[in-house]
Amino acid sequence: MIHLLYSADYELYLGSLAQPEAAVLLAPTAQLLATCEKIGIPLTLFADVACLWRYRELNRHPFPDQAEAQLVAAIRQGHDVQTHLHPHWITTRFDGARFHFDPKDYRIGTISPDPEACGRLARIWLQRATDHLTTLLTPHAPDYRCLAFRAGGYGLQPHEGVLLQALYATGYRIDSSIVPGARFATPVQEVDFTAVPALGNYWLAPATGLATPAPQGTGLFEIPIAACRFSAQERRAVRVPEALRQALALLTNRPTPPVRGLPCTLPATPDDTTDTLAASRLKRAYWRARAILANDFQRLELGTDLRALLACFDRYVRTRQSTQPEEPLFLSMNIHPKGIHPAHLDTLTRFHQTLLQRHPGKIRAITFQQAWQLLNRDPVGMCGQTAPASR
Image (cartoon, rainbow, N blue to C red; front, side, top):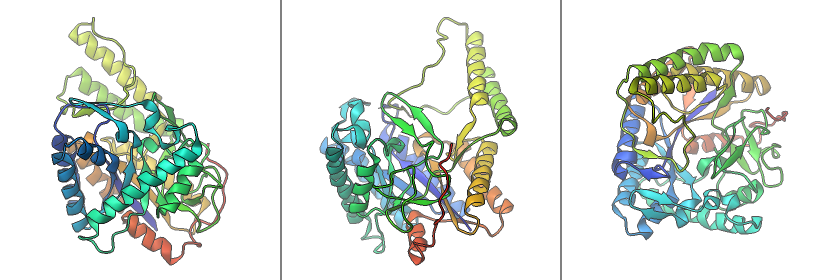
């Protein structure tokens, strides 16, 4: 059985907002939840709780009040809410619609040069997150438990041992921060998941870190965001149609949805300020197509390219089931509501419907709480094999 956990990072843009918070996060999340209801899948919202704390500290109460009301409504509808933590919010300064923070505060492991200090802060914040969500949600769902975590910016590193220790000590039992094979760096973060185990699922513990599975049934159970690297043939089949589609959209100046905000870092783009309008479109189309064609890495993150998502799912499942053929497979798809529009929701619908057609009776969409209930039936029997690190 393939257990597919649809999840969403419930967060604002971290650099600046171009629209009010309700338009940036609440409205697209409402549309996402409505789509999930329509196609019959439960969604887990990983709530960026530190953002809500900071807004309240600065007496900006309407947004956190509205966000918490939406989280409660999601729980009542049978969805799930778990912890997402961007620790930089603790000290973020507001400048109108812009946010400013020290880059070292973006990840728990870089807040202090002392790993033990990082661990102490992690315990404080994780316990506060657990208390926050438990107090908010248990009146509406008595069986609710805060047990799953996703690091902001996937930032489990550095000093992952102290973070894993803090997670376990504060009651977390599932992590969903790892994107197998991902490796990237920005001014605020560094992620390197190229050496994680090449297994569908495994256990994480402070003593073994991220590269070696922990003993069966101990520590935190990892439910990664599925990802893969395409072969040259797969890349041609998947990337060429999308490169042509996006290039044509730029050349014909098709309307694009309004920007809701900006991330805290932006990639460099070609400077076309001195070009004519036609030359600018041509240049942007060229660079966009080139970037798409050069990319062999794909994570299961909701976009508008259905081919890429299906190919990623198929390759990930095929490779993971080859190492653990007799065991259930748990994997997550991630969604960022702040960046989705109707085309994304259409893609989500077609993605799920296609999976059900291709894998009849073998796909089950569940929440993270449901995953833990399944694991509790036989925690030691899940994912007991060892495997070489993925490359």
